[in-house]
Image (cartoon, rainbow, N blue to C red; front, side, top):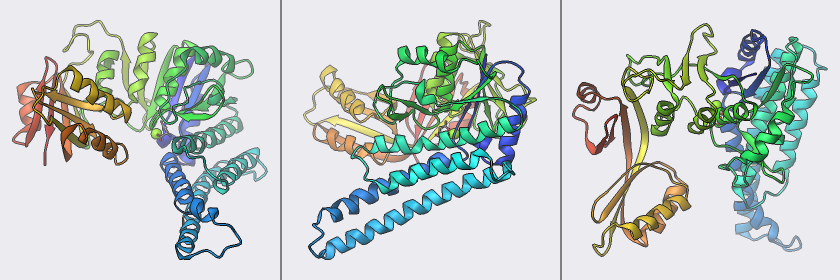
Amino acid sequence: MVIYKFGGASVRNADAVRNLAKIVSQYPRQLVIVVSAMGKTTTALEELVKLYVDGWFNAEGKASRKPLTQAPDESQIADIENWHHFKNRAFEKLEEIKNYHLEIVHDLFSDPKHQVYEDVDVYFSSLTGMLNSEPSTNYDYEYDRIVAFGEIISTRIVSHYLNLENILNEWIDARKCIKTTNFYRDPKIDWESTSKLVPLGFHFKRTKIHITQGFIGSTSDNHTTTLGREGSDFSAAILAFSLNAEYITIWKDVDGVYNADPKWIEKSERLQKISYHEAIELTYYGATVIHPKTIKPLQNKRIPLYVRSFISPENPGTLIHSFDAPNIGANSGLTIPVFIRKPNQVMISVKTFDFSFVAEDNLSLLFGLFAKYRVRTNLMQNSAISFMACVDYDATKLPKLVRDLSSEFDVEVTEDLELITIRHFTPEVIEQIIGDKKIIIQQRSRVTARFVLGK
Ligand code: ASP
Ligand code: MG
């Protein structure tokens, strides 16, 4: 049994879906297909949630509290107008998303009576119903139950299309099998329930193909959760782990993992193979080809992962597995340097007010605050009385973190930085990449050199 994962780009229009069908049809044995939302649907749904929730609480909440018998005062009139404005925009957004999907459906299914039309309609009616009812005060909960529709709808369409093409398959709701904690938008997997439920759901009794959604799961009381942006890779790995898959293939619009983003470094090269260890390091440092959480479950069961191109499926792609051959950097599978660039970094520099050392007490206070707001440090450094952390820019989390830090420390924030990591570096490649750029921090270990660069 094998897992194929198709991301948003691989189902972004009708031709892409036809191409998916072609790739799938060439696999002769039991297969699980994990599919993302179509094209940029997740981002569009994120915008929809924002319009819906913000609109409701900024305006509707206040406006509706006024007894109907009293004429609304001026501020309330503004609120009501504001609410209508948001509501209209939310419905416009929904219409946009619906039309995008319908266009693909029309292109794929010539029979207007095909079941797919009714299915898609039902999903969009549920979304309309949600937008018309009052949201809870938990934004992340609202996000998960709405954004998940992207995957539900895309997999329905693809499943129907494959059946139409005689690639018989059974659609499975991933939320019945992938169980998580109720930390919406960033839950932990309940591995015990999940690894029991997945083999029950994916049983291959009626068809040799199962199709399901990436990115989504549900809590023990069946509320929808999402696993984080680009989380479909992780879903595929969870299924592979629970089903003891032979291997996973992630089909992408690039033909493997490269040693640098080709848009950044022209002479980048495809890596034929890399070890799990190397892959997890690369994703940790910011390589975006695969979701960082994907590797661990695969490594635990030694399940190989291929990254291949759905545009050129004849190309071998990159294999991620365990390699024993001695290469650069203990068994990394690598023979060339790898460059990773993380733009949009923020440096948070913290000093103690009273010249006390940044020792155990202060550090645990600092880490506690970073953990509280789930701000991940990409690089950190400390001296006697100061601590610096480089983090991703985040307009919602960082102001809260900085506010809390400021009550305990002297805090300085520098935006617009870039973090460059070079694995398996040589002095020559550092010279080439860094040259005379403005270095704010640099750190080197045996295999990894890292630079925070300013403008
Ligand atoms: N559809 C989700 C996203 O765009 C998950 C994924 O594609 O992996 O982030
Ligand atoms: Mg995607």
